[in-house]
Length: 166
Image 1 (cartoon, rainbow, N blue to C red):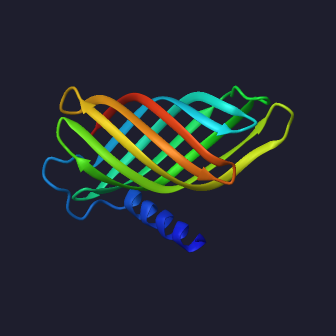
Image 2 (cartoon, rainbow, N blue to C red):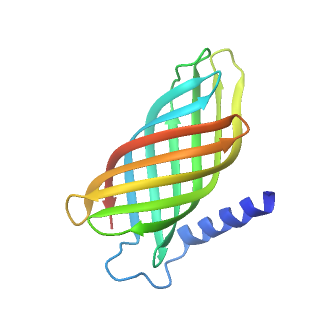
């Protein structure tokens, strides 16, 4: 299982560092979106709301890499927490037109601390579904839902924001 995460991480790193071999006509190499994320930390720390940045790099035809950090300054559980989470993986574009739909999967991690000083941290895998609605050729609205399976259990989130492609 650990080797699979190393392979996914390596593919994502290669995709972010090196230019795509052949980008299909009409596709942009990069999509960057920012917005607000509602994220379940765990049973004790509850739900958090914070800023999210989502970076996608188109590699080949309908395949690409994604990285999505989110900062949760506080949460609503029995103990509040301050955490940073990161998803890194691959995505597959399902529909590409004015409305773009994609599915993703990869590795996820979360680190931080809660209000009594206990560290919060863990990792696992995620699956995601995203949608972008392009209002102009390079600007649009973005949404993404993620289900993470970590050592804390199942941790869903949803985010909305603005997207720019170039």
